[in-house]
Image (cartoon, rainbow, N blue to C red; front, side, top):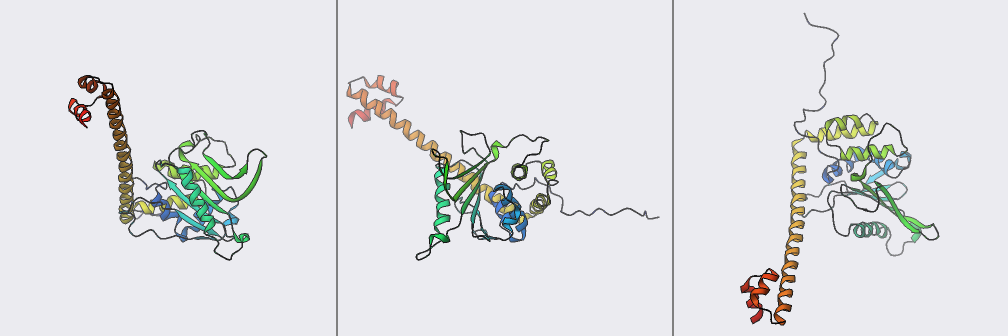
Length: 299
């Protein structure tokens, strides 16, 4: 006899055999936030990052929703999400997973381009709207500060007056997130978003999904993407490109370091040769071979 009163459990997503794809991956971030169907998710994150009511982002348009066709094979570029708000503000959001040289200068440069690209010849400066850059980093950017969130504008530190907020840069460092506590804080909504980006275990995702409807929707999207073979192939290709780029950069640094060491040895040997020091002593002192020292003496 069939049992009654039992509801059949519906499995919303196929079983995830691998870890959930991380939101901090630039390619997954772009897929999630660059989709206009997820406008409520994007709006929620922007409101949290800029500490403003969500109503300010009632209308947001993603200016670059498509992924570049050949991005896995190309040189590792920046996959950002560019947003235009109803008030005309231009917001650029990007993820940085590894250390790059001159990062503050690069961030400033692209923020300025975001500003200057708004007007062309003949237009008035009054048409310029705020250009905001939000950079989420999985590496340390500011060694002199333990804060995870910084806001930079044009400001006079001597007279304590702001020149303009037309340029604004937000840096969010995942490596500096505070420990989870039971106490509620005003910026908890931003912390929840950043913890979601840093999450690795399924339990973390499930816990954060209870914090708000948009966080739950984001976790559901990540689960769905994680169950999609095509998305995993895209993610794997991007990760390979990223690791290859890191290896190339490290290789270039090591190669340059070795060239510098060898140059130093040669300069030392040349100075000792100028003092008529025995080549065998020079070889032992400099670390060069006797043959290399003799070749230097003959050149």
